[in-house]
Amino acid sequence: MVRIALGFCLFFIPVISFSQQVQLEKFLSDSSMIHSSVSLYIVNAETGSIISQYNPQKSLIQASVLKLITTSVALEKLGKDYTFKTTVGYSGRIEKSTGTLEGDLVVNGGGDPTLGSENFPDYYNGFIDKWIQAIKSLGIKKITGRIIVDDSYYDFQPTPGGWIWEDIGNYYGAGAYGLSVIDNTLQIHFRTAGKGSLPVVTNIFPQDPGIEFTNFLTTSGTEDNGYIFSAPYATMGWMAGTIPENKEDFILKGSIPDPPFFLARTFYKKLADAGIKIIGKPVTKRIIRQEKPGGFTLVSETISPPLSAIIKVLNHKSVNLYAEHLIKELGKVFKNSGTTNAGIDVVKEFLDSVDVKTDGIFIEDGSGLSPRDAVSSAEIVKLLLHMRRDGRFFDDYLKSIPEAGREGTLKNSFKDTIFESRLWVKSGSMAKVRSYAGYFRAISGKEMIFCIIVNNFNGAPGKVISGIEEIIKAAIINN
Image 1 (spheres, rainbow, N blue to C red):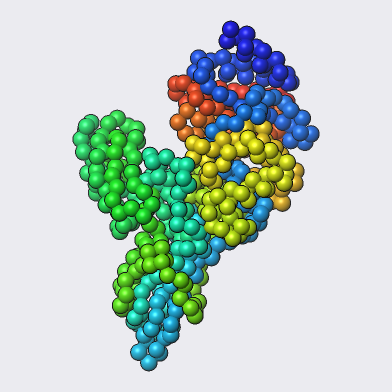
Image 2 (image 1 turned 60 degrees about the vertical axis):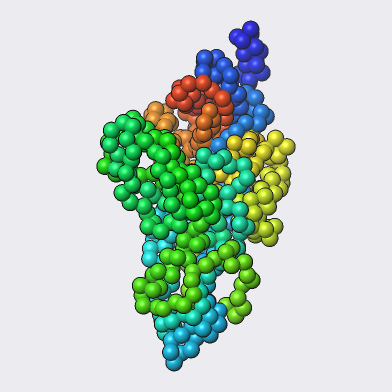
């Protein structure tokens, strides 16, 4: 009965080549796919004609392939040269005779997802030191007020409601704040011994992340199955699971629970080290809950890389944090509300405007980390087709999508020589989910656009990935 049903479904796939049909049928009939759901859509990029399809309108969990939606809308709506700005200034007045600032020193977050990021060292190298130099150039030696980091540019819900507890405390679950810094990431270094032993914490970077962890980790094997459990704004958390045995320096990365407060403390300490006395304590707007002080005087500003550079890192490295910032920025700019929900409204309005059906698109965040997200392969392909035909900044968009086998998260996949210089693809993965979408050039020279999403497969993901590679390979060879 399974074979009969499968044959019936395949009857409705446009048969461009027997080889393509065979590869798809082989993939779907594998024992690992018995309980799975699959959505596949491949079209000719020039004509829009369908090359192959299977459940093209079925909405499935797509994981990080959702970033293709977020980045396309951000590029089209904000523009490739759009930047974020972080400003430093003061309230009150400077008594020049004594070098005393009679007021507060204020850092205004502007939603920059990349402030201090190691992904952009040329933009941010020594950015706090530059702020301090600007402050000292005004002759300030003493501050009677506080260091205030204004983190109210976005709302105070850093992580979307649909994210799972296991993710939030880890680096890939870092939330988007009105002021984010160093990718909102902390690193915990361990020295590990034999199986079943307790890993020893040797260092934490940055040194004052604002949270203490209880260590429930043990050592086992060679895989990293360690997790950090904490919540935004928390001061306590714990680590559990297993990390590899016999490592001199193993690093587990987590999310800083309150990046604005971390920056306030760091700035305060660096100012003190520079010889500037501060009477008040470091705080954030969220903590003190007061209106912005009047009479703000600008001292220094830090500008982000252009959006085109940000989305290239976002899609190449699949950085969830950057995607969450972009979804909030869309809400801030076009709805005057720096919230995830407002950003999602902007995204859906854009999709509707380019004839991408949104009745089967379920979006809970910007990155695809939420298991509540779902899209269909057909609508992803329609968006990619729009970007290629009518997108204002398609060249920048295409550059942001990794070249398979060479770049980003796809560096170690699609290694067959058939894919060289002809396949650009964004991947998505979480437990029981694998998805791929992008552009490829067939042997004939024809340009193609595709998306394939697989949910609830059994067994090792490698088998599913190999099957997907064979389907794309057949499409490259036979079109």
